[in-house]
Structures are given as structure tokens and as C-alpha cells.
Image 1 (spheres, one colour):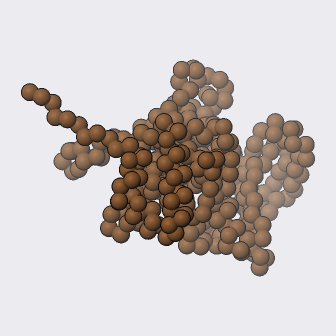
Image 2: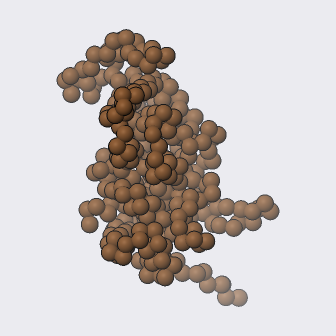
Image 3: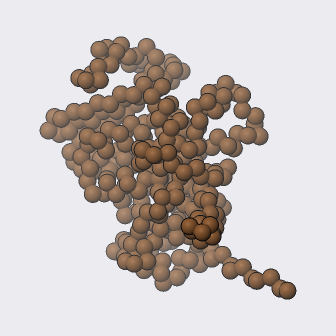
Length: 321
């Protein structure tokens, strides 16, 4: 008996030529010239990225359109947003039947510089900053009055970089004079990452720092909580500070709610929708106070990264085309 032929996967470049995707792009961007430029750029970017070529075409397009609609740049050099592949588990109905097989999807990831960009656009922030605090710089923190008893920053850049990080501080000041400061110790940040990121383990991180992880197992530690803990911590601080005390415009709220989500086309109105909760690392940045589901990760899967340009191997870079 002959085997049933499996439907051939539609390449992203082919999917982009369908009326469904053309209509989605035009409806989202509204400008034919901008739509044509976007379509050409995203098609070329995916063509040179083997990992993204394996992702569901709809999630690639929807994630890229969300970033474009927010006027954010996906270039790794700018660090505003990324499209990151991850392998989702199969979805099943109540009877256990597979309704969607496991597949690679593109996750929309907002960089911490993207948060800063969106905040500055409000025109309300006079000052907005986040940085790590090094050993010896902090002389005591009063959480009630939100002030340091003493603070002496190490001016020598190389010396400061070599010192251990003891905490993280984020601060903003409105044009009207209102200020807010948030400080977390390094231990609190470690506990936060350990609790809310499915791809991170504080115990494993210590082993990694001590060189106890075999080289052949290093691919398991591709999460940027392992590779760029300080960058991830800065993003977490901005999310905590701005979402609780900052001015949130409509576009900031949209970016905040959809950060770390898989976006999909909405067939009902030709718009964009976040996929129902089956996305990577939702809780690591405070999107959920419940333990999020574990995601089967590939060697190139990354968590909400704030990496340097040469570290983003799977992120779409449209700006360099």
C-alpha cells in the first residue's frame, strides 16, 4: 500500500507571494511603498538565515510586522527587537489527539533598548537609565525612601568591568520632576531568573561559571540568562520599573504584552494576534506570575536576548540589507 504523500512545506518566499500575506502586510502598514520595502527586506533576511527558514512562515511575518508597526529596528547592533526561533511542543485536544505538530516558530523579542526607545517617544521622560552596581560602589540602600546612603562609582572602565556585580539599579525622571528608582540585589535577580525562566537554572549557572560543564553540553546553555546575565537583568529592571510606575502609551503596552510571544496572523480581521499561551519564557520577565510551561529548545534557541551583534545567530537583521 502506497504511503500518503505529505503536504510540501511552503517556503517563506512562496508564502509571501500569497494574497493572504500581501493583504496582511498592506492592512498593517497602510503605505504601499513601505509595505513593498518591508516585504522585500524580510524575504531577503529569511533567505540567508537557515534556522528561520525552518520556522512557521506566519509567525515570522507577524513578528516582523509587529516590530515594524512599532517603528523599531531589528538590527542586532541596535538591540531593539529580535525574531528568535524556538521549537514548540505538539498541541493536543482534550482527548489527546494532536491538533498541531511540534514545529519551529519565530518569537517576537523586545530588547531592553527597545523599551528605552518606546519610553523616550512619550516625551515625558527627562532621564531613563539602568546599570549594574559593582562591589564597593554601594554604601547602603533605603527601599522606603529609594535612595542610597552612599554611592561611589568606579570611574576606571576596565577596573569596573572586572569587579563582581552585586546588584542592579534602574531610574527615571519625568519632565515634571517625578522620579522613581528601583534596586535589586544580584541574589534577588538570580532568584527571579531561576523561578521564571524555564531555560535557566541558578545551580547550572554556577557550574557554568566554574567551568564544570562539558564542551559537548554547552549547546544546552544557549539561554541569554547564561550568556548575558547582566543584559537580561537590565531588561528585567526596566520592565519592572516602567510597567509599575512609568507612563505607558498604547504602543508601549502593546510591546510589553507581546514581548516574548509568538505572533500569528488573525484571519478574522487581517491583523496580528499573540498565540494562545504556548510561548517561550513568558514568566522570566514578569509576564506571568505562574511557572510557565517548559519549551523544548534547539541549540540556537535563546531567551529574550540583549546580546551583542555577533552573538545573535538566529535573529533577523533587516537593517543591514
